[in-house]
Image (tube, rainbow, N blue to C red; front, side, top):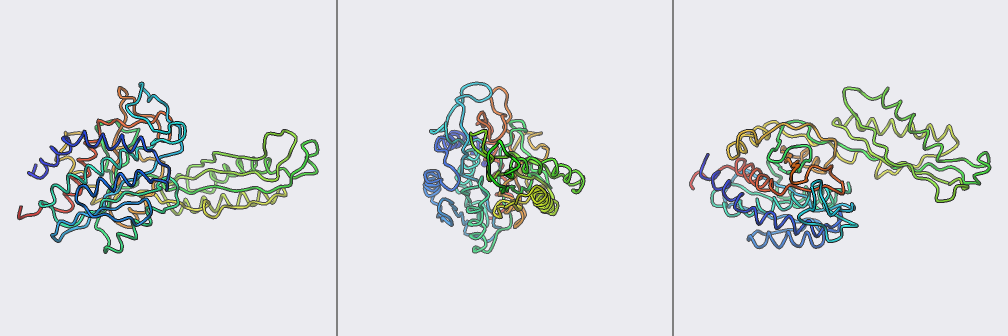
Length: 409
């Protein structure tokens, strides 16, 4: 272990109180996508207190730049800021949680973005203190609106990095409820799935429930699309390239039982690790819904903004994976770096990884005694704060290893 690695190890642990405090503050704010007013202000204030220049390439997206003053590689480290419109229970899986959203009936950090941002702030603090022992440039990127799929924050960050001449690698952490606390995964290859959306309005003809023959019921049509779609997915998509069929809602009509509605809406998503197969799934869905609608005298109106591939899969670069594993193994106990199954959730971070080689690190938070391990986007979701120093250390270690220690120091 080098002297720099020892200092990173010591500082990550010494900074636990700061990291936890940042996580709790951001957790309590819990602002929705593209509404991260106070969260972005807090993050920017912290970065400026470190002496780092900051920029806002989008309204609530913040980037800080650490220029060591020496030539070298460029590294972008990314975290996300937004919370979810999910109510937060006062308890996690084991009992009362240590902190709670200030608006628990409306919003909460049910995916761990509060932890992501806190760990990146602490890593920024450590790397800034070690500036004289590093080469190159490090960009600390805090992205707004990750959950929406609108790409406001990620597009702004990628455009900013492009204007700087690009970077040599990207890094992000996502806490993961299926991986044990104290473990992390930097495996090469696919780590999170791509996603395509479904939002189709079936247009029929409204009428009185007593005479369905005088109306055209869009609810029947929407219901018939589902078994047709299931059959098509089973018989037309490549069985070796899984695409999940996640239709989650059929909505039509109101509270009256005797009114046939004019429209019904189908919503959902498909998840995949092969973009071409994901695009094929969208085409198959559209054909099935269009043909079923025509057969039943209805019309299918597709939401062009949603019914497309919204994000590709997150695929870790092989050489970056090796470097990350070596850097993290050098400063952590044996067995810390583990293997985890692919995760079928999706991430805007895929756009970074399709532009630059890099890593999405999965940090385990499953701790039965603490009460963490509930599904993401769940009212009982919580983050085991004991793992935060590990995430900080992994982030700082990867950045330092990629930049390279200054030989003169």
